[in-house]
Image (tube, rainbow, N blue to C red; front, side):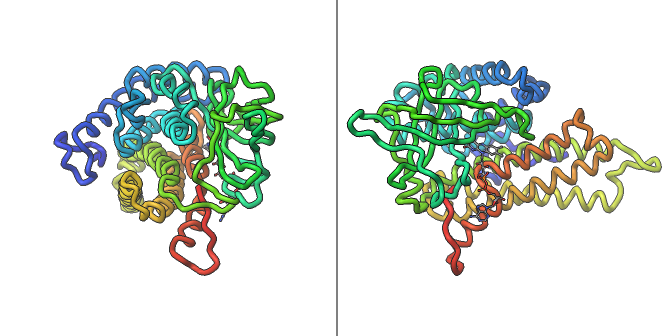
Amino acid sequence: MANITEIDTSGRNGWGYTEEEVLLRQNLRAFVEKEVAPRWEEGRNFDTEEAFFREMHKKLGDMDILRIFAPVESGGLAQRLTNVGIILEELARGSAALSMHVMVNILESAWMGLVSKAAYEKWAPGIISGDIILAGCGTAPEGMANYPEQASLGRLDEKANEWVLDGQRAFSSGGQFCDVLLISGITDEGDSAMWFVEVEKTPGLTITHNPEMAVESTYGTVDFKNVRVPKEFGGLSPMVRKRKPQEFVGFKTFAVMCDWMNIGTTEAVFEKTVEYMKNRTSYFKPLASKGLIQYKLTTMKAKLVACRAMATLATQLIEHGDPAGMLVGDLSKAYVNDTCRMITDECIQMHGNLGINPKSGIIHHHLETIGFSIGAGTSDMHYDAAAALMGLPEAEFVAM
Ligand SMILES: Cc1cc2nc3c(=O)[nH]c(=O)nc-3n(C[C@H](O)[C@H](O)[C@H](O)COP(=O)(O)OP(=O)(O)OC[C@H]3O[C@@H](n4cnc5c(N)ncnc54)[C@H](O)[C@@H]3O)c2cc1C
């Protein structure tokens, strides 16, 4: 089958990848096929996940994957966001959990650099070389983007020169075995802030693992009780001021990178489904020879190309800091969310009984697309934000 990511090595393809980016994709695809895809279940199994993530984290560090987006002065390769999209898409073809883990470590270490110089200097070199694992927790019990109603999480104790954290946050990215935790929340003054702590050395922190969550086993919650963070290891982030979400194109980075993970997972499942339809017969003819099945497969392919086109445009607008990346980012996240879920749902049906057998992995990949569609904001939330950006009456901007 013609694969729209198999591109001529000159890099002069319709998607605008450079030669290095084409090579990056090829190398990662080979790595994922050989080392990740056969072990995808280890990334979602309570007994094996920590060893799996630590091993993969180190390997990806040694391959310079984790340093791709970091600035040169801190040992990074300072490549454009498009590279992060390629990495996440390719990893998600083999393991959605690993892809999510890598997104957090690449992008949240970049946030660390924006918010706390002290934290960045202390931990970023270890994160991007694959020695230190970072996890992020920012979803509040009152709702991830519900800034007006969220209880404040942190306050600055000027006398002690410390932040004091009290409250709860959810995590999905391996909080139960991370070395360093990024915490985000609202201060008592109503501004968004981030704090960075070394888990082992931080009293008052309780991490509860909830491996029963459907998508991966790396979910849970973090409780904070009088957690003290040195002032320089926290700082305001530009997301919310006085409980009002701010418009800043950089926020859409997480959402659009979730698009790439969703696309990677969905394309891998779709390719398996096409092969299955070509090989499985009914009345001695391949199922893929039937007009209705051909219609379904071709329209699924059309939708995947549309997802890729939207995510490519959104990624490029964001990497240029173009304010249009806000609206296109919201539209892309919402469209990719809904489309990938629909395609992987159809893939289950096309596999018949095998589709719902957990051993086939098809139903699990559908759950992964649901996960990517909720993580970094649901389509409802992103269409809601888009309505505000389009100036529709009474629509209120939501920052995600
Ligand atoms: C795979 C995955 C990974 C994740 N990773 C992390 C992580 O690493 N760290 C972390 O902190 N969190 C993480 N999350 C949490 C995730 O960001 C939130 O679950 C998500 O943003 C939705 O927020 P919520 O759960 O608070 O839902 P709620 O805000 O309670 O929303 C509930 C429902 O209401 C709808 N809704 C809410 N607000 C609006 C609105 N303004 N307009 C229209 N409809 C609305 C939503 O669509 C949803 O259907 C992850 C989630 C998943 C599934």
